[in-house]
Length: 167
Image (tube, rainbow, N blue to C red; front, side):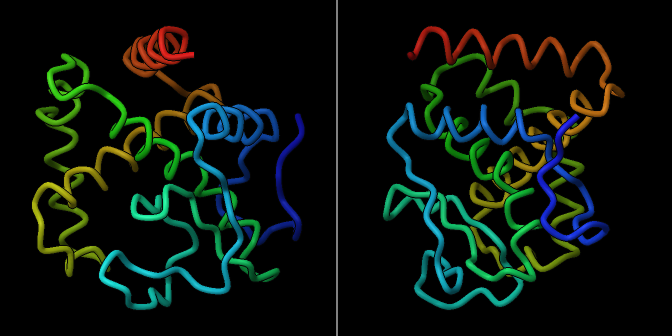
């Protein structure tokens, strides 16, 4: 299986090439370009030193830091950034959106994020959306690594159905 990894051993999770292709196609189909940027800027306009990529809702892009040393890990975060876009595209009253929002694992992830660099996010809604994006990326990783459980595949089927209806 092809893995996207420019420097062997540097990236913690090497996203499979076909996953990057699928994620890139999804973003292209919804009109969200991936752009390389010299640094990641927060929604409030400040540089985010440790950030490698961000779903930039203000500019309607996914920004990836253009640093050769960080590039493998930055591209590995593309599924999570696409997940943020996908979640935002769900209609407000979509049962899947409510299910993700109310999920016990989401609550656990929010509490975990409060102990990390995400602790400075003041909006509970933004923190919950971050948690959901990370959980979706983790499910994609488990599916790639063939360690997923039935819930992961059920969720992934709902995701594919959503994309099929949208495109």
